Length: 140
Image 1 (spheres, rainbow, N blue to C red):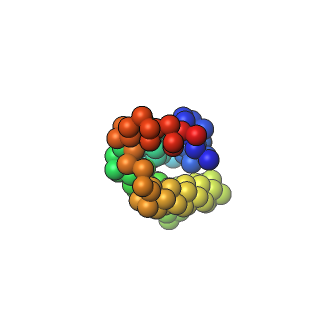
Image 2: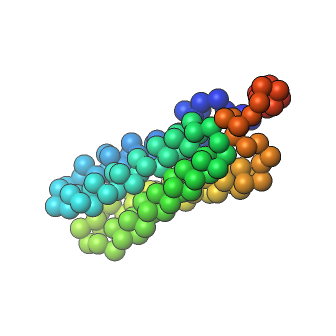
Image 3: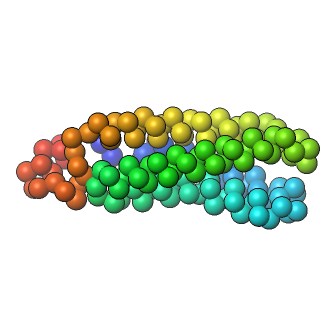
């Protein structure tokens, strides 16, 4: 299936949900004492969907790949921070939420990995580099 808008991509939708739920999670009491951690979690979670969108809109496969790699790295960053939070007593009441974030990040990373692999093997150089004949062939 070919997508015309990043908002329709399942991986973008999953990552947008990750960001939304992260902002709710970081509103909890323990984060008031750790504003740097809160800010880093929010930025990393939001970075996933933003980089998917930016890469999608770029127009070349190489640029698209670069942004997907960044998005995947941000998902890994969120997962790493969740693994750290698992070890802190002040977050012990949040174990279920933390576990869900880890699962979400793993799902997003797997989706991004699959997409990256398919783009790496693609003959399409990106929309910006296609002539009119090729654009018509790939648009259908």
